[in-house]
Image 1 (cartoon, rainbow, N blue to C red):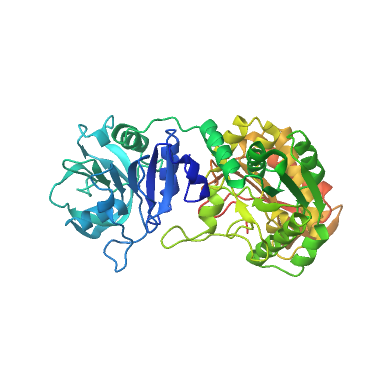
Image 2 (cartoon, helix red, strand yellow):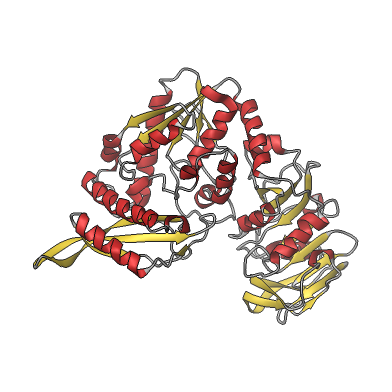
Length: 522
């Protein structure tokens, strides 16, 4: 399991790991996922914040980048610090950087090198390419190409249009590839990554959910000590797993707060409080509906709504924390996609949206943040939750956005609109469960659109609201595709919603994928 730079890394330094240096590629997290699939621990660090090279680091991977090595001020790193000392793999930009730094020639591609290609020349005797096949399909995505390799570099794979598809430095375990083995379109990419991580770097494949739990609990104990923690719960898998980890480490020093922000699903407040009774957590329920409605009054911009919700969450937590003696920490269930999509450093992927629980706390709130899951993807969080024996009802729950239904109501927020959407959402989600479809879907929900449409009911003209239903499949939320729900099911949902929810006369189904769309509409 990958851990980005942060306090959680400290106790895990004894685990064998791969260091991934991020030059800004959208695919960097996919490299990490492929390494973790091998049960090998890895960390992602920005190229300009290279950590100390401790003995536990067994190899280094240089990511791709949207930049060109030929650009003035292009991202750079002192590769001499680890070249020849540790196995090194440059991917795309990383390979071009190695070639450029050591005397090779990198030029703009004469033809567009993007999409599928085949390795028609491949040296299968090379450790990096073992068990791969001639003609192996790979995925290209670059505007530059390596025209000439430096002295002492040998070409070990080519495609019809890319002579230097892969190279090796003679006498050392330094490699470069101009394709992306981490994406599924590179059909033998997992092979190549395994060859590097396990075969060349010699990593033990023993990084599991259990080792993550043991290491994280030990770190939490050491970090928090005798202090108290206040933690916000949402009822979802992320906050539940994070709270259980913290509780396992410090017991009754943890106080959990579940806030009714008026933007939850129908009956969710009562159901969530009941479910937490069985986890042994000390949970305080706080009814703050009106406080949130007041803060959202008149706001239509999605970022303004997110920020208003985030501000009030912080205020509520601050109020509750001040009631508890000795609280010094705020626990949060932030996961890795939240961080990737919310925090942009020089180079790495552009900010897509802000999250109310990402980016630190205001000065007035004298609490330190503890985020035991902020380096894990959703599927990994679920694995950890099952290892912690959290009930499947919670583990299998669909993700639900932190700002709740506020970002599924396009335009301004009113209590009436929330109640309308709650009813629509309830019918849809319950319908998925009743028809055995819920577990086939990664995330589902309904969106209340800021438009009205003409309808006819009982020979009368209506002019009422439109709702969109959304159901997607995904692994980690970074990419998603719409689910092909049965027409008969969709027809029943449309009929039930229109007949049972006053003020709605039209239902549509969203068939957009991520990218280019996002899962949520705001």
